[in-house]
Image (cartoon, rainbow, N blue to C red; front, side, top):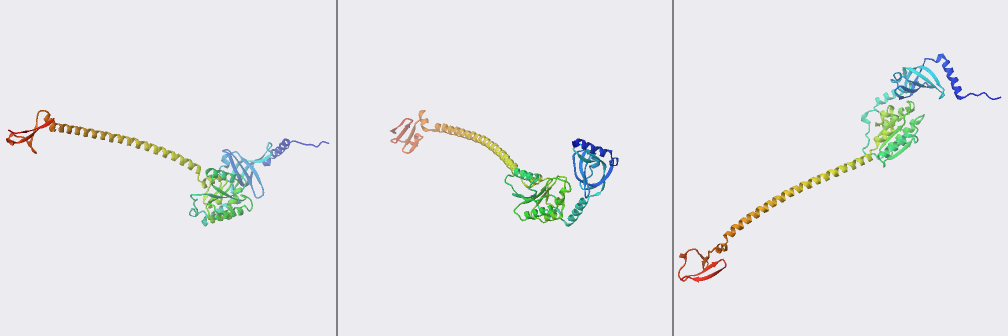
Length: 368
């Protein structure tokens, strides 16, 4: 006899009919703690509603119903369960949320936060600045997953010579806080310039290990500056308040820790090119100024030389006119007796010997 079988679609359709036929499940109120709240679009949210022993996945299509709530809030959710045949999944469709109180984890978080803040563990005056030069980074996180890969990729892209040392730990679950504490203490006494404590996103419960007091105190007592990079930008843990610097994501933590050497190199090259252009332009301007000044000096020298030439020519003309030989050429003669020049007949007597100089020679004679 052939065994009676049904398809998966038939089974899911039957389960759906059971839920739809049960009137007691319509518009019921369920209390629990919100966990894993995500809103991929402005009018849709997914989250889990949980208590100490169980949880159910919830869907809400009304933004006004969920926008004021956060992970850890204890609420009363009004709606009805719905079984989706295609995925074989039961969801609780929520149409209204009202606060009921805070969940236990969140209350513990608030109480510890208040106590540690009162002790001064969050005091900005106790926070250590990041070193100006960072060559080695200690990272406390899981050795698998995207977090360490993101940190390595971002850090080495910004500075290929950066040295990254990983202390592998679990980042959630029972006892993970002690592994993280040991990682912080290890790097506190190890040759690193800064420590990054990181993990990816998750629900409030997933990130709760970083709300543990042992991690907060080890971070506060650490000798090296710590950058916390837990979850996403909207997630906050106790470690974020104690850490010296908080990064919104692990990638941002790597950006904060590692100077962008390549960008600096490109900027330096660009500035060198600009400086080279400025120097060339200045040299060109100086050359033009020098040429202009040289032309002015040459012109002045030429003017001076021409002036001196004119002066010399004028003096030569005067000297030529005063040259005795030139006077003699026009019929005058020079008469001398001994060393004396005769300018008057009264200077001569009979028997005086004289010399008569013409322009082309001289003669001697005697006065009768």
